[in-house]
Length: 131
Image (cartoon, rainbow, N blue to C red; front, side, top):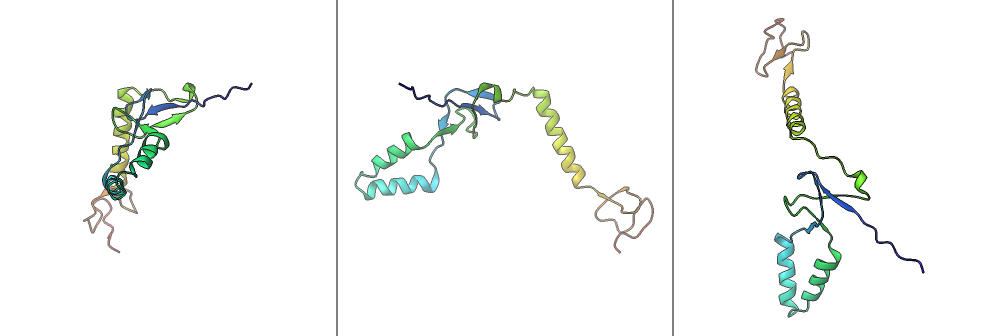
């Protein structure tokens, strides 16, 4: 007889930068929790059965138990990315801040010198910027 193979996936948290053995289910919050409670009371407890079926059979475990971040799933351990060193994360953060800062700078269209947004005349070449 042919054995059915269970497909195994490996969970990885980008925030914690590690493989997660036992992920958690996402917590039911806000409006959805209120709707479930209302349905359970309105049906004299019979809605508890569909709730338990949904919660423990249908809903998947997709949340990191440590940081509550959404997990990425891979088919093999080789696909899981290597954890980054702390210095690499710091350098990436600095590069992102630098790009954001550069995007907010204005330059004169004639001499390409950095100018303030309030300037009407370029301090470098003297061109009227408001025209």
